[in-house]
Image (cartoon, rainbow, N blue to C red; front, side, top):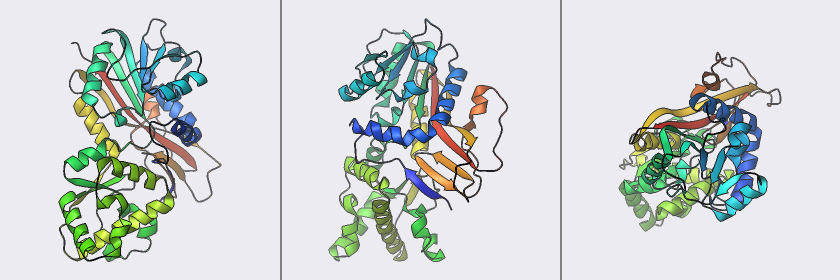
Length: 374
C-alpha cells in the first residue's frame, strides 16, 4: 500500500484565476528538473529543428509561461505564446518581458495558414470543450508534417470529462475504493463488494439511474447518509467537477466523501441493489479522446506517459520510491515499475532501470501528432 502525499486536484481556486498559477508553481517546483528533462528530451526527438533561427513555433494556452521555463533557450527565442486570459497573459509578460505574446483562443489563432513548424501546449487539451475545432485550427496553421506536442504534468481537469459521463447516464465519483484509511478498517467481505480499480484511477462512474433511485429511497426514509452526499444529491456536471476538485485537494474532505460513498455502495450491494460501477483513468480517457480526435488530418506519433527518475538520498527512511504520476505524489515502500516510456528512449541513449532506492520519479503525459497534407 502506498501513501498519498499530495494530490494536485484542487479547486480552492479555479482554472481561470491567476492565483491558481502560484499554486501550480509550488506543486511543480520539486519536480522541475525531471519534468524539464522529459520536455526537452521529447522535443529533441520529435522536432529536432525547433532551434533553427527560421523556425516558427507557437504555444497555445500559455498561462504564465511555465512551459517556457522548461524549453531549451534556442526554442524560446522562436516561440510565440498565445493565451486567451488577459490576467494570465499579464502574468506571463511580467515574468518574461522579452517573450512574444498574443491574446488568442486556440480556435482562432492569428497566424497564416501553413505558417508554423510546431505548436506546443502544456495542460491545455484536457480543459478544451471542443477539441475538434481546436484540431482543425491547429491543422490550418501548421505546415505539412508540422507537429503538435502536448504535455500534461498535472492531474487531468475533470471539467470536460464529467459532462460526458453525465450525458452517458453515469455519475462520476471519487475513487473511494482505494482510500487507504478506509481499506485499513474494512473487512475482507466488505472489500469484495467494492469495485475493482487501481491507485491511479481517479474516478469511479456509477450508473446514474441506479444511483438516483437508491438515493431517493434513502432520502424518503430519512436516512442520515443522504446528507453526507453533498453535490451528488442533485448531480450537475460542473458543480460535480468543482466539488470533485475541492474534495480531492483536501484530505479531510476527501476522507469524509469517500466514507459516505463506501457506505452507500456497501449498503446498496448488501441489499442486492443494481449498482453498476466502473473505474476510469482520466489520463487514459484523455489519451483515447485525443487519439480519436486527431486521427483526422494528423498522423499519430505518440500518446502516453514519459518517465524520468533520479536518486535522492533525502527521501524518508522506509520509502524506496517517491513517485509522481497522474497528479498524485506517492511514497512507495517497494520499487514500482515506471509507467510509460523512459526518457532515455527519447534521448537516444541506453535506458537504465532503477533496481533499488531511494529514488524520485515522475511521469508526464505526452501527445505528439504530425499534420498530414491538406
